[in-house]
Length: 81
Image (cartoon, rainbow, N blue to C red; front, top):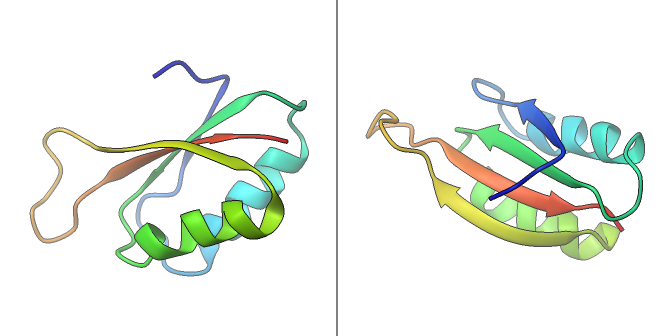
């Protein structure tokens, strides 16, 4: 999926991925898309909740190819509102 900015949040635990996404999105123009790469198991719940509460749009969640089975990496595509 096309995106305007990339945020590597791999290795960070809750709540850091969402806090970093909030900060990055605040600096982006409305309509821009952020791809956040995260391997925190809680991000599956935290990112959709953050988007719902903040008004941003979660466009897609994709499993990253080749990630570790015990800590799968996912890519979250978030459109800034």
